[in-house]
Length: 214
Image 1: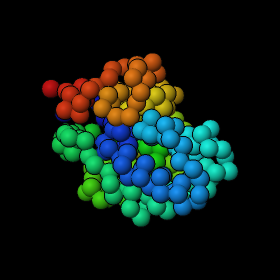
Image 2 (image 1 turned 45 degrees about the vertical axis):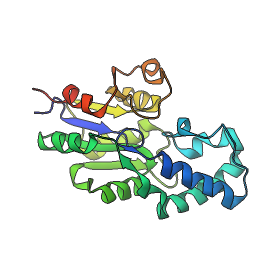
Image 3 (image 1 turned 120 degrees about the vertical axis):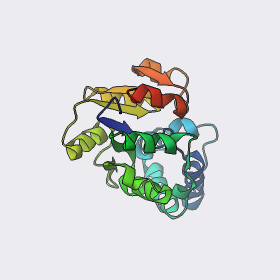
């Protein structure tokens, strides 16, 4: 059986490698609105937190607003379908669900896009809840996303968060939940440890033994 009654999972950098779709759509959006691409300032390190939070310090609030609007159109049309599951993740999800764990997606990606990715991968039925940000930024932090997930789940007895960025750790801790760091994701060296992840797991295949009670 699973050692946790509820497993909260981040999406980008944890379940799927979505960098190609996100950064490709973002590059197209910059070109479409005529904003110069900031070489060296935009890459995998910005993935995870909402783009409407990470882009303004780089290109300014007005340009960021225009880019994000165009990005969302581009991403919904094509980019989200370029999300590739990390090796071993699909097997892990099926195993956890089969052992009775409630799986909930908790992502800062727009919920409508997260649902489309799960549908495309055939994973929707594995999740008790799918929670993301809203298109009007009503859940701008991972703590707000997790709060919504727990509310929809009706609470939890034993829960753990799995994520690859410090926002996952901080958001989980705000609700008294431990976070296991996904060391294969987009986090910078030392980021997860410094944020207080209870452990950092280097591969999806090594995650199962930490979640499943034998």
